[in-house]
Length: 294
Image (tube, rainbow, N blue to C red; front, side, top):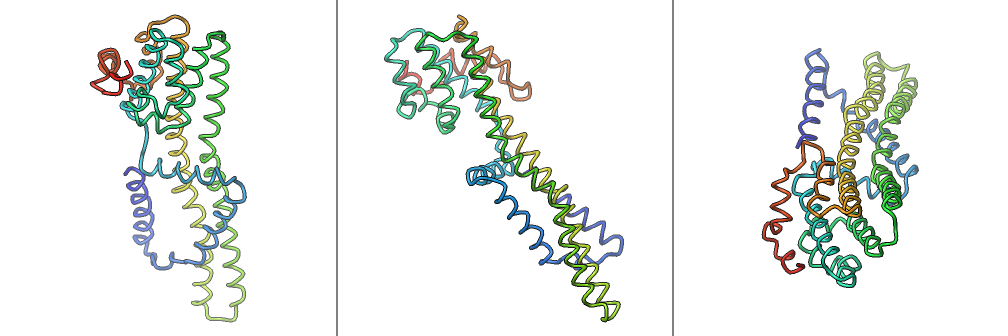
């Protein structure tokens, strides 16, 4: 919703200001200039990025436009999964816990938190390090270094759409100039025509420069920043998992380990201690999957 409101405000103010100055809005409608600029941008975007990045950019744009950022519910679900797994690690035999981390799609624990299970990368991250805890031979500082390296890799992959969109935004003003130059070339071929026709052709050419700059700074650039903010917030889940499991490896009780993870959440989204306790220690808010896992 915020994205649509921002676009409406930007376009309305631009067109309204132009009309208030006495300009004719219909002059701005130059579809072939738009084809040159947008088509060239799309082509260079495809050339510069792999197919996986192109697909992920589509997903990232959907997340940003629909404002699919994390909520307290998302954090509580992750903390709920971690608490249940840590409780299993403390009280169950090794082979019983391995069933959950080796096949999370069939695990009652993960089934109780479908949003976590739907995030395959995060689920694998949790399971991989729980498996290392089960093995028990790795040192905490070694696990922490490995986690940091993996989180950096995940963050870099998640932010590839941001880099791709930023490159497009940076190139749009230049492509606008390209469209304007082509328009001027066309105008030069009509020097023997009337001043009215020649003026219209030059005006149409200048629309290319305007379009490239406006789309870059008022649309693609801000959208890239929103993609970055959305993806960075989703990467915060990995930090929560990291701090929680490290505290557990250092001997903290599951509920204390959860507090280590909770403190890494932004104050704007951080659930209270009571909320976390109600979701985990006090029975998981009545989730039947947790009762079955226990």
